[in-house]
Length: 509
Image (cartoon, rainbow, N blue to C red; front, side):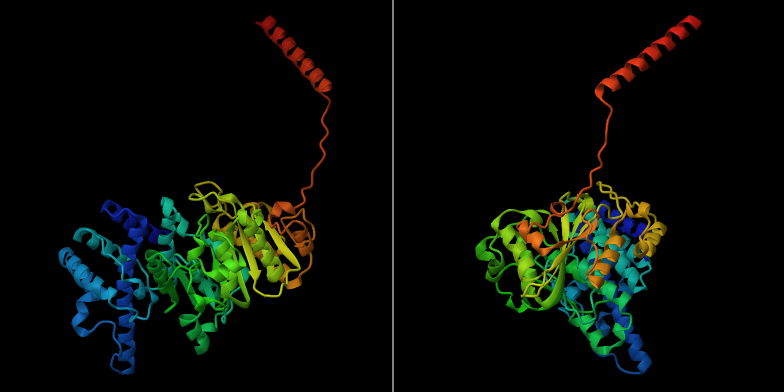
């Protein structure tokens, strides 16, 4: 786990960039990414050398040739600032750009448009020394460190749309429970947060997976797929995967909604995504098979159509949608909801409070979980009304629980939980109750509770409206008040009593 000391070191690096003239948060993290990758290449080469020496063999496919020793992090980091700047700018950075995947990482494929913009030798020297001082021997620490840097994008204003809160990502991964044989995709992957969280879940819940050569090969080369059309995001996302120990994920530069992506149809068993909201496309630039599912220009609807097309039959999806998808009255909105309910299996609708995406968006959202069946399967849909996610729902998004309270809440979530702690964080309760529903398909009939089920017949009768307030029953308590005359009489008596006390006080004076 990343410590407070390491966070302080990262904060110092960030501030050094800003004071050195690199103020765009995406530019800062890109430049840090290049330096981290140069360090990673040296580590990989060193590991290969040690293995070859141990076995008494020659080094096959070295990353660095003997004449390129100055390009290794362990060498150039100790150069004087001027030489370090010249070597990195004129030799190391072009070398990284020319690797073209030779180093076994998806990250190297997205270096074509990369630009080195650190302006001065002094700034490069400071940042290199700071990065070298951060202890990153443990792979988990590397991943956590990079996640912490990515979190800074979310607090840097308008660029925050690239990042889904990590605890919401983990919730969606827990609810879909990835398996070692899954083929997982995020068609709008950004920084690859969903893919990283899925990998972490698998390593935690299927510890023996990487001991099986077939599953290990699948994990490193065939399991994880992502797409985005922003080259900066692809570089950052691929580096995120690399630092979390996934050797060669399939991360591609493409617009998932456009034509000519037939190879990605019927391809995945699990999709996890937070697709772009509020966008619109021209019909001419949208894949025709998506328009057959739902004829619309709205990206939030087109992406759900895409998920249905990309999933294999039996594949499942968890995605975030704006509330308008649940109750929108246009033909496209109704058509899409009808498709989910009538032609596939809609498993769950989890309504989230509007503050989840603050400080950079206040839109109300929900999580949809569904399974592609092509033959219906929706009988009853599980609803949950999330009130709290463990953080304040204002722009500050401060934690409402200490780490100890959070662990206590998780421990007791399957035993009814702690009501006081539950009121601050509903997520452990969501996971426990959804697992209970999936295992038994029983209970949850009381629509006055946070979690309840709604029959398909009720949903059809309400024109496929999926908003939770359409079905939740609110129990009102009758309160009886005294008549106005009685209240006025009591006020008059009280006023007379006060006046009498005042007269007594004056007499005493």
